[in-house]
Image (cartoon, helix red, strand yellow):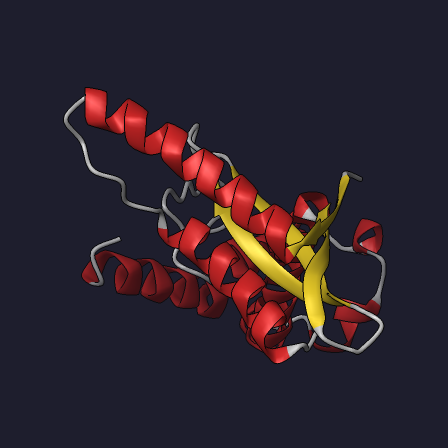
Length: 193
């Protein structure tokens, strides 16, 4: 985990910003360009100024940053005012932590939770279509080939598949189940699948 720690006074901030802006202005002027701060840079400066003006700390602000190479990173930023002996704000201290791995893990977790919720919503319709009833609670290895195919067909057709290859689904089971399978396939075809 990367942690960046800065302790700056108002005078330090002013000097640093003025020096950097002056250097950038000179380079851009040579190229015939004006100076325009990015939205992110403006946000960072506004945060600094807000802490300096209000005297209130900014705690664990999550910032999403897209680097020049297109890679997205997240940081957690905390900034607090530095006060003199009279309580006047004279600077700020800031800590920035790279929380990219945590944010990526949270995104993956949310996606997995959505998949689980989707499967839970589909569970009842899968069991109903397969017509396995109470047998659904038995280990699959105890199923007959017909029961296995019923469950497999119900699973793969619970959502519209991009590709559906049917081999034995229509060769096993009774005519009623075969008819249900054909009706589901026809419904896919009619919907453009």
